[in-house]
Amino acid sequence: MIDLLAPYCCPACGRVIDKEAVICRECLSKLERTEQSFCRGNNTEELFSRFAKFIRGAAFLWVFPHSTELELIHAMKYGPFANPNIAYCLGKELAAEFMQTDFFDGIDYLIPVPLHPRRLRERGFNQSEWLCRGISEITHIPTDTTHLLRVRNNEHQARLAGADRKKNIKGVFAVRFPEDLYKKHILLVDDLITTGATINACMKALHPIRGCRISVLGLGKAN
Image 1 (cartoon, rainbow, N blue to C red):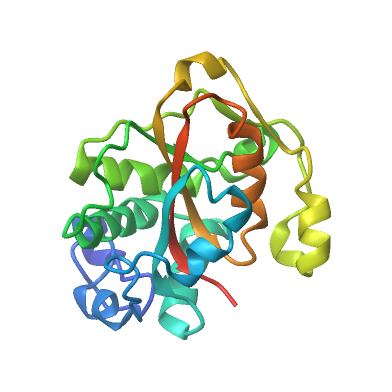
Image 2 (cartoon, rainbow, N blue to C red):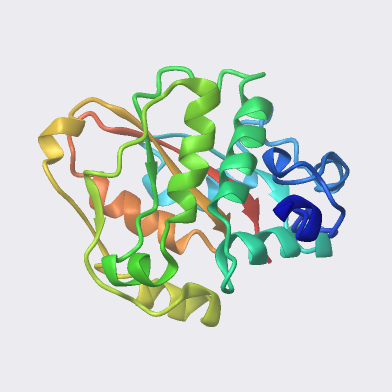
C-alpha cells in the first residue's frame, strides 16, 4: 500500500522504479564517463604529483557538470531525504568499471575520506564510506574507517576558491595506529575531486608511514 501511495522514484529523473534499483538504468547510462579506468599517467594523477614516489594510481569515472550527475550528488548528500544508498549503488558501478583493469590489484584496504564527527552526526552518514561499501561489494577489499581521522572540523571545501582550499584543509587529518598500515597499499576514496586539496592533505598524513603505497579513486571530477 505504501509503495502504491508513495512509489520510489529515481533521484535524478523522477521516474518510478523498483526501490532496490536505487537509480534507473537510463540515468546511469547518461553519466559522462572518462577513460581513466584504462589510462595511467592521466591528469588526475598530476593533481597528486608531490607524492609521486608512493602513489600508485589515481582516477575518477564520471565528469559532473551536467544535470543528471548534479541531481544524483544532491540527492546523495543533501536535504532531509539524503540517501546513502545512492553512494552505495554508484560505488558498485565504479567498481564494476575498474574491475575490467588491474586498478584494484594488490590493494589491502579501502579508506574513505573521513568526515569530522560533528559533521557525521549532522549528515547521518559519510557518503565516501558508502561508496567504499559499494566498491567492497564487488571487489571484496575491506573498508577501513579506523586509521585515517579528520581531527578538525574545517569549512566546506565547495565554498572556497583553490588557494583557500589548500589553507582550509591544512592539518585536518591524522593517522591512528600508523604501524598497522606498514607496507600496505591503500585506496583513498572520495566522492568528488576538484583541486585535489583534500586528497593531498590525506596523503600528507599518511606518507610518513614506511612502505605505505596509495592509490586514489573518485566518483567524479567537479569543475
